[in-house]
Length: 418
Image 1 (cartoon, rainbow, N blue to C red):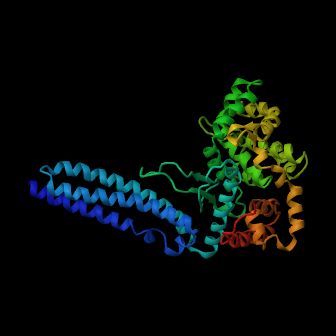
Image 2 (cartoon, rainbow, N blue to C red):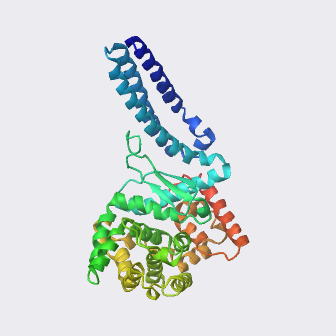
Image 3 (cartoon, rainbow, N blue to C red):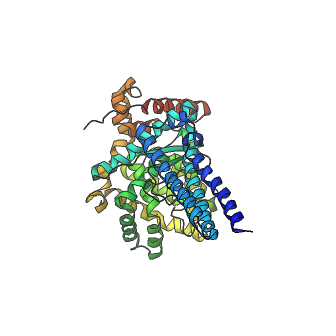
């Protein structure tokens, strides 16, 4: 191939990728305008600006490559740069499409309004702990997706395009748990624990609490610190309510709920559920709806009835649960300014009795008051999800009540009481 033909071919290929970049810049083609409009203004601006920044960088690279191609005496050098531009494009495209898919879920007005309400709840949950610590709360973008468990793409982590940091905490809510979205608070605590440095500190505390009984157990529990932190944060902010939702997600066969997975930061399901039950017992007393859950899991998956080594880890952990729960919620941490978690997020505020008192004193205004919506959103969420309907009709009615409230919560940019 002659140099002229090679240069002409490169110009054609570069034109293709520069055209693709130009198409990518039309964010309204990635997610419909009405879906973008369902985001709060500050969230929409921050997210779009982050995506457009990466696209503008690509556009500049493409323009520079065009100049280089015209001036270079060796077209093969331009081809190396073109292949690099293509790789960069694919990384930016992956980022844009990922966020676009999350935003596009809001095209349906009803779902869009519910997700906006969940965005608000997510920010409230983070702010409840971060605000007393003087740490800025990032915006949140919630989106529904398939599967069993929720997830978070934390604000501040580097994205696939390597062009900058995630501008928002993007939180997946599973479709089946849109009716019981308390996993949201678990995921926001992941963000909080990362920002305030609690994970590393809790890892050391778990090791110190468990080590007197077993060095092996201490090593295991310390590796679960990030998930323990998230579960404890969800409990402190929403009480008992996240526990049945968690149990629904992590249940399985007896061998599965006791299985230790090397490298997995999640405790085995049985240990995790029983630890959450112990949090309820520690703060709310031995009797409550958590008692039925504990009895059912004990009957189904009693680790003391198995010779499986993984089940024996669970059995050996039983005597430790009370001291671990106490350390997580009542011990002072530097991460919390030398205070215990309960001094910032007091579980007593979301005890069953406290939530019923909120229901009694609020009466008919519970779900209509803008003041309560902006000052008690987490407690109202806990209240609306704390019962366990026993038939589909009751579950459907509860979901409708919750979603109606979430849809009204979203457009309320009112200041909280000080």
